[in-house]
Image 1 (tube, helix red, strand yellow):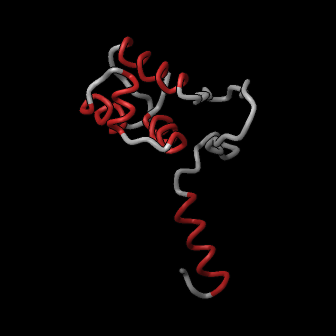
Image 2 (tube, rainbow, N blue to C red):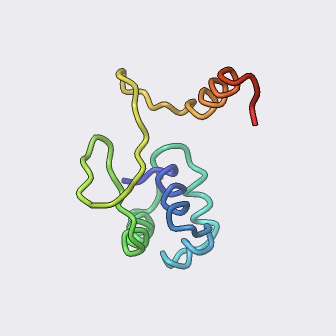
Amino acid sequence: MITSQQMRAARALLEIDQRQLADLAGLSLPTIQRMEGSDGQVRGVVDTLVKVISALERAGIELIGENAPSIGVGRGVRLKETRSGDSLKHVPSMLFDQASGANGSAE
């Protein structure tokens, strides 16, 4: 339904913090913290998940399911996958390593 990574990314795009998301969804701050602290797919009461998703959608976020096309317009962000289907979760450190090797120093 929604992953903790999608929740954090959506908040970043909206430039809101966890408390603001909690207010938008009509939930408590600890609930949002627990949801975002989970690994991968967020588990919880269906009503709570629906409140978060509805709040994000009302704010202008399009949540894209795995292997689903985007139906919206405008810019967005999606995590790439390798040919084997594994997500590239270690990419940032790889990019920093490549950057420091390319010019001899990291800034």
